Every structure is written in C-alpha cells, then in structure tokens.
Image (tube, rainbow, N blue to C red; front, side, top):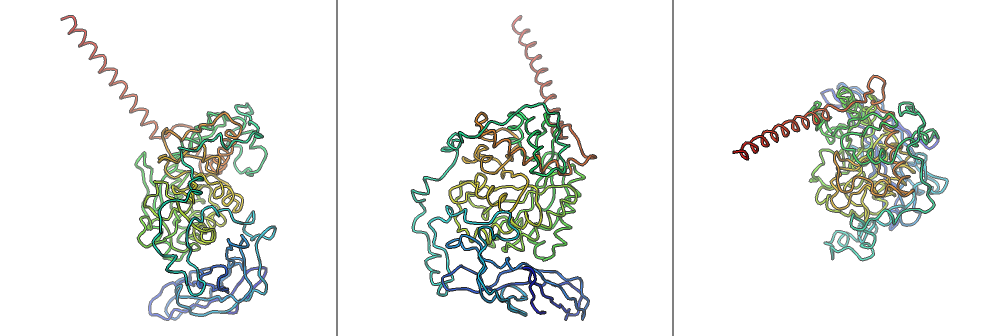
Amino acid sequence: MGAITESDGTISFDVTVTNTGDAAGKDTVEVYYNPPYTNGGIEKATANLVAFEKTDVLEPGASETVTISFSVEDMASYDYQNAAAYVLEAGDYVISINSDSHNVIASGTYNVPETITYNGENGRSTDVQTATNVFDYAAGEVTYLSRADGLANYDQATAVPATYTMPEDQKATFINNSNYNPEDYNNADDEMPTTGADNGLTLAEFRGLDYDDEKWADLLDQMTVSDMDALIAIGGYQTNSVDSIGKVQTIDCDGPASINNNFTGTGSVGFPSAVMIANTWNTDIATAFGASIGKMADEMGVSGWYAPAMNIHRTAFAGRNFEYYSEDGLLSGKMAANAILGAKEYGVYAYMKHFALNDQESNRLSMLCTWSNEQAIREIYLKPFELAVKEGGTGAVMSSFNYIGTQWAGGTSALLKTVLRDEWGFQGFVLTDYFGVYGYMNSDQAIRNGTDCMLVAYDTETNHVKDQTSATGVQAMRQACKNILYTVVNSRAYDPENLETGLMTWQIAAIAIDVVAGVILIALEAVAVKNYSKRRKA
C-alpha cells in the first residue's frame, strides 16, 4: 500500500497486488475507513467500505499496481440528532486494505484538521440540494443500538417490544384509502393548466431537449385531462400511447436476472442472480450484464426493464436476497449503477427498485410500517439508490409497497421529491410496485407526492385519478406526465428505426380473441333463438 495523498478533495494511493499462488486469477482490493469516534457522539462503524477495484488476471508470481481514489466527503457521517447534515469530524481516519471487513492487510492514516459540516451552501459536491433531515417522522418509538460505552444499551435495544400498538400521535398521521381525500391537500392559489391546445407538436421533437426547457409547457398543453389520466393510470408493463402528442406505446418487462414479456411469453436467457454478480466485486461484469439485458430487450422491442433490485440484505433469510446485491450499500450501488449504464447503451431505461426500505417480504402488502432513524436511512438503505442515480443516471424508479413511518413509500414526498429529485437530481419517472390497491395505494396521493405512473394493466378502484377538476390535481397530473414523457422520448423507443405507433402483439391477439368470442356468442344466440322459435310453434 503506497502513501495516501489528497488533492482537491480526492484521496488517492496505489496498491500492489501479487499472485503468490500457483494458479492464475483475479483479486479484489477492498478499501475501508475507520473514522474517529467520540463516545456518545455520531454513531459510526469501525469498518466502512469506501472503494474497491478488481485486478486483471494475474499469472502465478505476477503483480499489478492498482490506483485507488475516492472523495474525502465520502467518509462523512450523517448526524441526524444535532447538525441534521453530513459531518466529517476532525481527527484521524484509518484507511486500510482488507481481505474482508474484519481483517486488515495494510493501512495508513488521513487526518482531517477541522470538522466540516455539509450544510447550507456548503453541501456535498454530488448533491444538487444540500441534504438535511426529512425523515424525522419515521424514527418511531424505537431504542436504537448505540456504540456508546461499548454498546451499553444492547439489551434494551434488542429487547422484545413492550407493545405492538402504534402510539396515538402516530395513528393520527397514518394514511390509507379510508382517510385520504385529495381535496384536503388542494392549494387555492394553484392555477388550472391549459389542456387540449392545438400547438402542432409531437413528442418526437423533444428527444434530447433539456428537462427544464420551457418548450415542454407547449407540448403538455396539448394533452387533455383524459390523456393524462390514461397515461398515469395504465402503466403495467407498458406506457400508454397518447394521440394528441404522437406518443407511441412502449413495452416494459420484468427482471431482474432476465427480460421476460409476461403477455407474449417471449423471454431472454437468464443470468446469475444479483448476489452472485456482487460476489465478483467486478463492475465490468455488472456493466456487461446490463448491456446483455439491454441488447436482448432491444431485440424484443422492450424499452423498460423492471430492475435492478437493490434493497439491503438485512438478514441472510430474506425472501428475495437473490434479487438484491448485498448487505453493503456501496457495493450494491456500484453494481446497480453499472448494470443501468450497460442497459442504457441500448436505449433501455432501468427501473431501480424497490424504493425504498422494502427490506423484508413478510406483510409487505399489509401496510407494513418501517421505522428507522435518518442516519440509517441515508447511510445504509438509500445508498444503493443514490449511486444508481448519481453514477448510473437511471431514468426510472419503482417505488415500494411498504410504509416509511406512517406514509406509504409511493406517496412520500420526502422520499420521491426532496431526496430523489431535489437532492440527487433525478430526472425521470417513478412507477409504483404492482398496483393491487391493498387498501392504501391510490393515484391521487401518488402523483401529488412524486410517483408518476401506476403499475397495472387494467382498471382498479383507485388507479385512475379521482380529482381531475382542481388546479392542484391537474397540475400534479401534468407533472407526472412530463416525467414519463421525458424518459420515454430519450429511450430506444424513439430511435428512428424503432418508432411504431400500432398496438402491441398481445393486444392485437387479445382483440382477435374478443372478436372470435363475440362471433361465437352471436352464433350461439342465433341458434338458441331459432330453436326457441321452433319449440314455440310446436
């Protein structure tokens, strides 16, 4: 391990790897930091993965020097109790090369002379808007394990809960379909947008146009309220066509280890699961995997891929660990970001999922309230998604079934607007997880809080926007549609050679079946009438 240097906020050093075995192979350089800790201060782990690199194939006795680099600010901890910001505390940071999170091979020290608080105008370089507390409501009545005094509160933090009843003040903020009324959230100062205008524009003209360009308003003016509602409401395995703006229908398919059309039965070859890909510690493999998915999706006429999945392995026994990369946020995020970049090479937009804190399967459809403090949310559970946005440039997101505190994740403005869009700079659209309603999913709450499209291919009681008359409601519909359109027009669907305006094969087949069934019913009815007439005469 070479000397640690820092320049313009970037830490760098070289690591020489030698194959001391008798067979050729690759190895991983795992880099961890151990930050300074004050007893009772900001909670910190002693081993934090901050970077990793994979060597080339090394023959026995051969060596390779790998250069490691990462940002100083990557070692900041989130202080949710006092600063409500990321904080890089003064002191010595031990940076080490490990064989795993427990065993150090070599180490050096980097000193931070003065504490840096990333707040106000002094935000982290990767954030569009400075991060601050937005999830205080989700901390709940929980005793969080503390490192203070050698984990002195371990017994209290791991004890069986004294009650499983939600406190009254939290019940008062709990929302589901029984008590959600969009009119309660209308703003009297909102102005009704223009709808149904004849501006002569088509969506294809907006390919490559900046998200914030004022011309989008003229295109959106052409959509009727009915157009917007249909685009929002029926988003299962597709995005709807919109005649008024010349938007073509696109096909989206499930993953995460392949690309499969549930309607036509057409599917790709399958790949190793995400956890296997993460075990390689090889981002080139993740990129190649994503590119393979993208190429096959393009050949199948598919524009959207319901993947990668990147929730955290909170337990080895979680039901969908095979879909998720790791128990570590950085490893998960790096792998996912590269898979997304691979698919994007073929114009396929990936839906990173399930956003967020959907880290268990049990009761996830039963209004499962997930409690966590803001530090854990940001440092662990949101980390993979953050990297997928900032480094992978994902164009779509699938939200999750669970609640964060007392708010459904798919209807949580703090998550889908403040963090995802304002802080991370995401430009694209958010789709629900499968829209089975389950007593709490509804499009009005969703579109007003950052979700844009409902993952369902048929009508339910709540996938259509109920409030289509208020200025607030129509503005939310308009914004949701813009987000969908921006992603779609910049996808493979709008490559000139791929533009198709007709129905999908499965829809044509469904119509044909309906027609045949109708003809048969009419024929049977005619026979029945004829036989009845004969019996009546007799």
